[in-house]
Length: 217
Image (cartoon, rainbow, N blue to C red):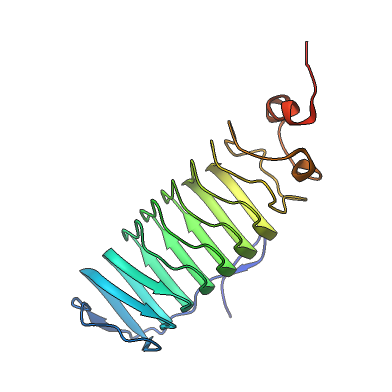
């Protein structure tokens, strides 16, 4: 049985007990290649540009991704642990049962991607591009996503714990029912119509009142 995060019923990745380990995976990765059932650790993956790559039951540990593009790819039952994914391009991809633990994700491009059962803990994802992405069942905890682009995101069953969204763009995102009361949202870009149903703290409500044209004395 898969482990779950109770608050939003996120299913965690399921990996085989005996995984083939490799410390060198910088061979050219071809379009539509399948990478399955391996532990990739302590290496640099660089200068890769491929589409429709399938990663299934893969654990990346202490991996640096440099100048990497994996557009329109599939990630299923995948764990990224202590990895540097800065500026990687995973746009228009599908991520299902994927966990990010203590990763650097600055400037990551996940625009127009689909996320199902995602866990992000202790990560730094400032300046990320998640525009037009779709999220269903996700848990984000103690992570940084300052100055990121969340415009027109579709969100459902999202649990947020101490996430910093300061100065991020969120106009057009479906925020109804999302609880951001435990997050930092100072200076976010948002429209009045996007605030309907958003759950915030009293102090956050005062800060967001300017989008409703209110003057608080």
